[in-house]
Length: 139
Length: 139
Length: 139
Length: 139
Image: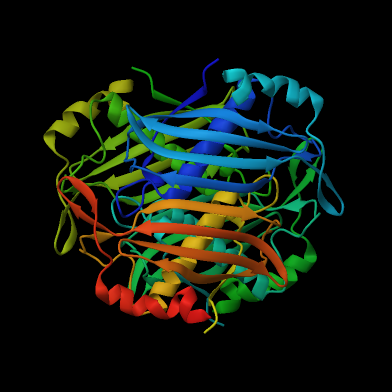
């Protein structure tokens, strides 16, 4: 199976005075692709009234080429590691044949309670549905 | 009493490819001033675990002059109308002697429940604390 | 001819702690629809290296119902007035049969130079291409 | 010399439906601190009409604890490496005694021309002014 592909066009408010997409927005594109992958898997990252959440514990990105207003690009997404309590995503943003950025985001599964958030195991149903998007399944 | 004044500097990510602050960000500046006014009044617009909320029912702005990266400006704020269920704010953004924008935002007090949000009366304590910032008190 | 329709899904980063789309983002949705309309008309609001720009001179919106994460909606767009130097857009955001928001944005055509921006006439080619999206043409 | 400290309060629009600051906004806080450091050094990251720019080539962050609406925090900033063509910044976000996030951003100095951006040497004046904020000078 190939990577999950999320397609997008750059919007005006996502650019800055340098005339290119602001680097913080690249992380938002990666997040949008992640959530689209969840929908494709029959899931939602934020079920209404759920006490489960998915805060990020790390994010990193290399920015290779700028992206400009109205350009179309795709975010190729796969799950690099599906662990007991965390999920690591790998992203490559591509415009035509130009690599724009390569990044990773790692999220931890938490249970929300009165006392805040506490790490917990990724639900079995989530593991089952995300498995097809993992790197191993892709090879 | 004069208007409540909130001071701010333009940040890089708030500009767009035209080299000026994006118009949607001007509304965020007005909101920041509103929340600073609440803090000055000894209140918070979003108390943790409160079932009261303040969604906007309308917002409008005239943009008179552009605002650019690193410029400092102030948001002069007053409460135009403090009604039974709604609060109307009036804002003037000024950079030195140049008027940048003039706007209004109206919020409604709601009680959040299982079935969504329902308009309710502005709590007496909020009325008491915001009264000094109303236009009548300013005159 | 009917309104121009732009379809969109709410993204996670567009929500705030109240669990709904932040009101400033509604203005971004309207702008996205405007730019999509321009593309449909064979135009770009921001041609590279053009000295013409389209800053907003006013924007207003009534927020009727909240919009939440992952909800799909459409922005129905028409040009209310195509004047010598300004263009006024009218937007209605709808989720299924629920009206989310009704708004307007007015932009002025400017020529950018050393001394800043100066209002100028809307180019004839722009008028010709946008005419089909005006309210008169819609009736 | 100690780290450069930039102080900030969380704004409402920076939170998401999970009730905490969106992770992409943490990168914006780091950028704001970087630009404040430049101002403290008598520089601007974006001089009007300059043909020099500072796009990011990488950014990374570990998110240790959530940040919530109206919380005050500081961004402790230093320059980890001041190289021929790149500058690497190191950031630690702290709320009272709690570490919120630890991150790095690397920018490259570019000259902007007709054909796009091309890496160039960091101007001597910039090196001279930023030197006091480098890690070596801090030890």
